[in-house]
Image 1 (tube, one colour):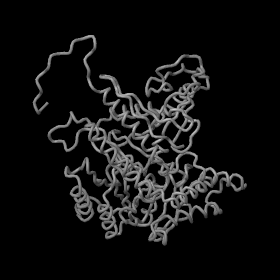
Image 2: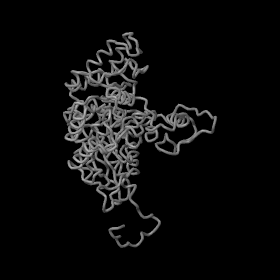
Image 3: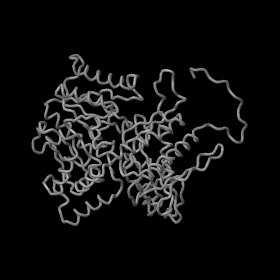
Image 4: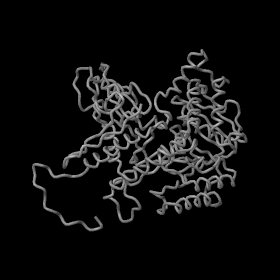
Length: 527
């Protein structure tokens, strides 16, 4: 659904929060603003203060044993809070009940419309309910083909595999095997780690600080923050928060030297590992692109020591970063690629693609009941082909660079924006507290509370964004690759309004009932 360019914001009065701006859609409605006649809470219990009213905390709980009735969206949210696990995540910061969606736009059960820049955490390369995806799914349903086939060969699976191989780096595609896994990316990571351990006969693993590879035991062990004696963590290059305090090319060079020293020093305590797993752009780690030269260096380091290189493309794949696969920016051809999210065209699908020389599996070495998701394969084939044929990766690179430039211009007027970074339509804005920076800090401290406030202000303006990074202080934008110029303008305008409103809310102001205190001498530099 195209979104027209928003009208200019109304100038805010002194000491008043900025007025939200929004763009009317084709129907003349304003996304993110309740429409007249929108469905209201139907329980008759009154509203306000709960999850369904837009708050993150304070949801009302029913007494033990009481049945919460009602069909309104607030009732649905209350039932979710009563019935679902405390492990739920997105539902806490995004208290909405989607009922319809198309492209960038989601409509909630409360009648509000939202621009979705989360896209299923990068799953929806073509946005919600793209016609080519729906047609592919309907075609399978109407054909009478079986929907569940374990790992048997089918025409649908063969078409998916052929389209997938057509998109891979040529050197890998010419000598590749594909392992269909359980439907989540974390299972594909597990399969990749088992594969390289089986093929090499070694056990250890090299991973990187800030990494995220999934939530199952092996995948989590390779992610940042989860200790495992079998996983050696290496410093990931980070220009803004460089672990060596240098940043730039020098920081990446020191990261590479540390890796070489660790592997070649007989007294380092690190035996030759089974593999190295890396993200070409760290997503959950804070949207941190790996420098291309550094990626090439990691390829040389691993190749010279016969260490399989595993690249996790679960979130970066299918055009997200401006290349079909993020690793292609550097020209690196890995030994193993882990793929999920967008390859299923919005439905669950995960695979591992690897060089045939690593194919040391015994039958059933990595099995799973749901390896043959026919609907996901059909939707995935349609998505891969559409992205390839319509050059959406190139479009993501061009539009993403423009968005980054505009956000960097916005950062110049907002000291709380510490860094703007990303690649293609995978963008992160790190929020900081510039007043809390010490003389030894190379970058101001992260500001997670401000980031959360910005996320909530975005939601109030009909914009869905996610948070990430080490301290959840990075606002992440993952719009669909079908994003139009007009929609990009609407997203940026709403984000700018939300940022200004969150900043305004943090500025201390004197109580209107009291006289302002006398000025206090400025503190010294040690304050």
